[in-house]
Image (cartoon, rainbow, N blue to C red):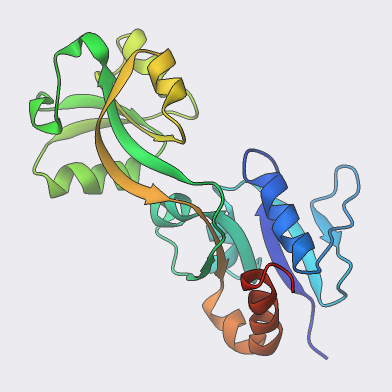
Length: 211
Protein backbone atom coordinates (compact mmCIF):
# COMPACT_ATOMS: atom_id res chain seq x y z
CA UNK A 1 0.00 0.00 0.00
CA UNK A 2 1.30 3.42 -0.97
CA UNK A 3 1.85 6.02 1.73
CA UNK A 4 -0.04 9.29 1.70
CA UNK A 5 1.06 12.00 -0.71
CA UNK A 6 2.25 15.11 1.12
CA UNK A 7 1.36 18.53 -0.30
CA UNK A 8 3.31 21.50 1.10
CA UNK A 9 1.42 24.79 1.16
CA UNK A 10 2.31 28.25 2.49
CA UNK A 11 1.42 28.49 6.17
CA UNK A 12 0.79 32.25 5.98
CA UNK A 13 1.14 35.26 3.71
CA UNK A 14 -0.53 36.23 0.46
CA UNK A 15 -0.27 32.73 -1.06
CA UNK A 16 -1.80 30.80 1.84
CA UNK A 17 -5.56 31.30 1.36
CA UNK A 18 -5.50 31.00 -2.46
CA UNK A 19 -3.46 27.78 -2.16
CA UNK A 20 -6.01 26.26 0.23
CA UNK A 21 -8.83 27.39 -2.07
CA UNK A 22 -7.34 25.89 -5.23
CA UNK A 23 -6.98 22.55 -3.46
CA UNK A 24 -10.57 22.76 -2.21
CA UNK A 25 -11.76 23.36 -5.76
CA UNK A 26 -9.91 20.20 -6.78
CA UNK A 27 -11.70 18.23 -4.05
CA UNK A 28 -8.95 18.26 -1.42
CA UNK A 29 -10.28 20.01 1.68
CA UNK A 30 -7.71 20.61 4.39
CA UNK A 31 -8.88 19.55 7.86
CA UNK A 32 -6.59 21.98 9.64
CA UNK A 33 -6.42 22.16 13.40
CA UNK A 34 -4.89 24.86 15.58
CA UNK A 35 -1.06 24.87 15.61
CA UNK A 36 -0.88 21.85 13.32
CA UNK A 37 1.92 21.60 10.78
CA UNK A 38 0.67 18.39 9.15
CA UNK A 39 -3.03 18.03 8.47
CA UNK A 40 -5.27 15.33 7.07
CA UNK A 41 -7.48 16.20 4.12
CA UNK A 42 -10.88 15.12 2.88
CA UNK A 43 -9.09 12.92 0.33
CA UNK A 44 -7.47 10.01 2.21
CA UNK A 45 -4.65 9.88 -0.34
CA UNK A 46 -3.29 13.31 0.62
CA UNK A 47 -1.91 15.08 3.68
CA UNK A 48 -1.18 18.81 3.84
CA UNK A 49 2.11 20.15 5.22
CA UNK A 50 2.25 23.81 6.27
CA UNK A 51 5.56 25.58 5.67
CA UNK A 52 6.97 28.99 4.81
CA UNK A 53 6.49 29.68 1.10
CA UNK A 54 10.25 30.27 0.86
CA UNK A 55 10.93 26.78 2.25
CA UNK A 56 8.41 24.84 0.14
CA UNK A 57 10.87 24.14 -2.74
CA UNK A 58 13.37 22.62 -0.29
CA UNK A 59 10.68 20.39 1.23
CA UNK A 60 9.82 19.18 -2.26
CA UNK A 61 13.37 18.69 -3.55
CA UNK A 62 14.43 16.56 -0.59
CA UNK A 63 11.23 14.51 -0.43
CA UNK A 64 9.77 15.90 2.80
CA UNK A 65 6.83 16.82 0.58
CA UNK A 66 5.82 15.26 -2.74
CA UNK A 67 3.91 18.25 -4.09
CA UNK A 68 3.88 21.89 -3.13
CA UNK A 69 2.49 25.31 -3.93
CA UNK A 70 4.77 28.36 -4.00
CA UNK A 71 5.95 31.19 -6.22
CA UNK A 72 7.99 30.68 -9.37
CA UNK A 73 10.36 33.37 -8.06
CA UNK A 74 10.95 31.36 -4.88
CA UNK A 75 11.66 28.15 -6.82
CA UNK A 76 14.26 29.96 -8.94
CA UNK A 77 15.82 31.73 -5.95
CA UNK A 78 16.24 28.46 -4.05
CA UNK A 79 17.69 26.80 -7.16
CA UNK A 80 15.57 23.74 -6.46
CA UNK A 81 15.66 20.73 -8.78
CA UNK A 82 11.90 20.18 -8.86
CA UNK A 83 9.28 19.85 -11.58
CA UNK A 84 6.85 22.75 -12.09
CA UNK A 85 3.56 21.13 -13.10
CA UNK A 86 1.11 24.01 -13.37
CA UNK A 87 0.90 27.80 -13.30
CA UNK A 88 -1.98 28.34 -10.87
CA UNK A 89 -2.60 31.89 -12.07
CA UNK A 90 -2.59 33.69 -8.72
CA UNK A 91 0.16 35.43 -6.76
CA UNK A 92 1.26 37.34 -9.86
CA UNK A 93 4.18 39.67 -9.23
CA UNK A 94 7.46 40.93 -10.62
CA UNK A 95 11.00 40.90 -9.28
CA UNK A 96 12.29 44.41 -9.97
CA UNK A 97 15.26 46.71 -9.48
CA UNK A 98 14.23 49.96 -7.78
CA UNK A 99 16.02 53.14 -6.68
CA UNK A 100 15.02 56.34 -4.83
CA UNK A 101 13.15 58.87 -6.96
CA UNK A 102 15.75 61.53 -6.21
CA UNK A 103 18.79 59.33 -6.92
CA UNK A 104 19.23 60.51 -10.49
CA UNK A 105 19.47 56.86 -11.59
CA UNK A 106 17.23 56.16 -14.59
CA UNK A 107 18.53 52.75 -15.71
CA UNK A 108 20.68 49.91 -14.38
CA UNK A 109 23.56 51.34 -16.42
CA UNK A 110 23.53 54.38 -14.11
CA UNK A 111 24.03 52.28 -10.96
CA UNK A 112 27.52 53.01 -9.59
CA UNK A 113 30.13 50.25 -9.54
CA UNK A 114 30.06 48.21 -6.32
CA UNK A 115 26.81 49.88 -5.24
CA UNK A 116 25.05 48.17 -2.34
CA UNK A 117 21.84 46.33 -3.24
CA UNK A 118 19.38 45.22 -0.53
CA UNK A 119 17.30 42.17 -1.38
CA UNK A 120 15.61 39.03 -0.13
CA UNK A 121 16.63 37.34 -3.39
CA UNK A 122 20.46 37.26 -3.36
CA UNK A 123 20.85 34.46 -5.89
CA UNK A 124 18.56 35.93 -8.55
CA UNK A 125 20.00 39.36 -7.82
CA UNK A 126 23.59 38.13 -8.28
CA UNK A 127 22.76 36.33 -11.54
CA UNK A 128 20.99 39.39 -12.93
CA UNK A 129 23.77 41.86 -12.24
CA UNK A 130 26.40 39.41 -13.49
CA UNK A 131 24.39 39.01 -16.71
CA UNK A 132 24.60 42.75 -17.37
CA UNK A 133 28.24 43.00 -16.32
CA UNK A 134 27.58 45.11 -13.26
CA UNK A 135 29.50 44.47 -10.03
CA UNK A 136 27.44 45.14 -6.88
CA UNK A 137 27.57 44.34 -3.18
CA UNK A 138 24.49 42.35 -2.16
CA UNK A 139 23.01 42.77 1.32
CA UNK A 140 20.45 40.15 2.33
CA UNK A 141 17.46 41.58 4.21
CA UNK A 142 14.16 39.93 5.14
CA UNK A 143 11.03 41.85 4.23
CA UNK A 144 12.43 45.37 4.73
CA UNK A 145 14.20 46.12 1.46
CA UNK A 146 12.22 49.35 0.90
CA UNK A 147 13.68 50.76 4.12
CA UNK A 148 17.30 50.28 3.08
CA UNK A 149 17.67 53.37 0.83
CA UNK A 150 15.97 55.60 3.42
CA UNK A 151 18.54 54.64 6.05
CA UNK A 152 21.50 54.78 3.70
CA UNK A 153 22.03 51.03 3.93
CA UNK A 154 21.83 50.55 0.16
CA UNK A 155 21.42 52.71 -2.92
CA UNK A 156 19.36 50.10 -4.78
CA UNK A 157 16.91 47.32 -3.95
CA UNK A 158 15.74 44.19 -5.72
CA UNK A 159 12.31 43.18 -4.50
CA UNK A 160 8.97 41.63 -5.39
CA UNK A 161 6.11 43.93 -6.30
CA UNK A 162 2.50 43.22 -7.22
CA UNK A 163 1.12 46.67 -8.01
CA UNK A 164 4.05 48.99 -7.31
CA UNK A 165 2.05 50.75 -4.59
CA UNK A 166 4.51 50.01 -1.77
CA UNK A 167 7.44 51.15 -3.89
CA UNK A 168 5.70 54.41 -4.78
CA UNK A 169 4.75 54.95 -1.14
CA UNK A 170 8.45 54.70 -0.26
CA UNK A 171 9.37 57.01 -3.18
CA UNK A 172 11.15 54.32 -5.17
CA UNK A 173 11.21 54.05 -8.97
CA UNK A 174 11.40 50.74 -10.87
CA UNK A 175 14.27 50.86 -13.38
CA UNK A 176 14.31 47.20 -14.50
CA UNK A 177 12.27 43.99 -14.29
CA UNK A 178 14.24 40.81 -13.61
CA UNK A 179 11.36 38.34 -13.97
CA UNK A 180 7.59 37.84 -13.92
CA UNK A 181 6.27 35.34 -11.41
CA UNK A 182 3.10 33.60 -10.26
CA UNK A 183 2.20 30.69 -8.00
CA UNK A 184 3.02 27.18 -9.24
CA UNK A 185 2.16 23.60 -8.36
CA UNK A 186 5.52 21.82 -8.16
CA UNK A 187 6.50 18.20 -7.64
CA UNK A 188 9.41 16.07 -6.44
CA UNK A 189 10.81 14.30 -9.51
CA UNK A 190 10.81 10.82 -7.94
CA UNK A 191 7.35 11.27 -6.42
CA UNK A 192 6.03 12.18 -9.86
CA UNK A 193 6.90 8.68 -11.05
CA UNK A 194 5.81 6.87 -7.88
CA UNK A 195 2.44 8.63 -7.62
CA UNK A 196 1.91 9.35 -11.30
CA UNK A 197 -1.77 8.38 -11.47
CA UNK A 198 -2.78 10.27 -8.32
CA UNK A 199 -0.81 13.38 -9.25
CA UNK A 200 -2.12 13.33 -12.82
CA UNK A 201 -5.68 13.09 -11.50
CA UNK A 202 -5.16 16.03 -9.12
CA UNK A 203 -3.45 18.04 -11.84
CA UNK A 204 -6.35 17.43 -14.22
CA UNK A 205 -8.86 18.66 -11.64
CA UNK A 206 -6.80 21.78 -10.97
CA UNK A 207 -6.59 22.54 -14.69
CA UNK A 208 -10.36 22.16 -15.00
CA UNK A 209 -11.09 24.19 -11.89
CA UNK A 210 -12.25 21.13 -9.96
CA UNK A 211 -14.62 19.70 -12.58
